Image 1 (cartoon, rainbow, N blue to C red):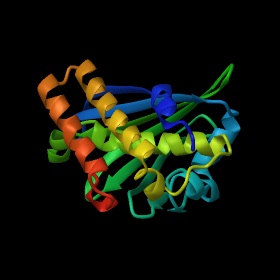
Image 2 (spheres, helix red, strand yellow):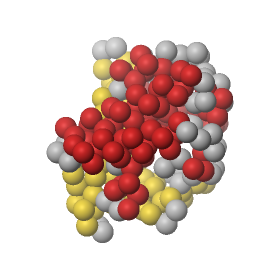
Image 3 (cartoon, one colour):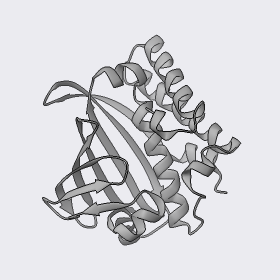
Image 4 (cartoon, rainbow, N blue to C red):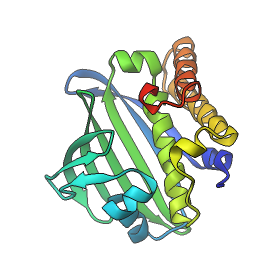
Length: 211
């Protein structure tokens, strides 16, 4: 299996305060450099056949202005698309709209992948903080790293319940708590939210109970 703790250390995580259409918001961002060409990373992130191998089955019209749907997860609209550099889309889940942007940049040792997810501050955020979405995206970046290295991980339900997978999610949740504190969030709240996120991801195998 991929060294998941090494993967944790490969990702830069930040939290930023934003204003969104409904009021106060937050952006969580992840950045990692992959040892692959930008065209390969772009294809992995936009080709439905490849998305199903490391992310999830995605259907719909995957082009500018098109509607997409992720099996068992979010749906939305592709709002911007500039191959192979960036795309942006709405992220609609359980009635709550948010926004996702992915940027790719060629570097000397590969491709810099940056993902930013902007969301309103609501009851879900107040309960779980940045780790609610952040841990899920960390899992996705780990799967993408394994896919690009041609060393795919086992099915997510299998590896996330392994001891290494549980440690990965605990470490991810902790890092997101730290990122929130660095962004100026109340330290006591950020730690409590991270603890609740950790519990939600590691104390159940039913992904419907995850934040």
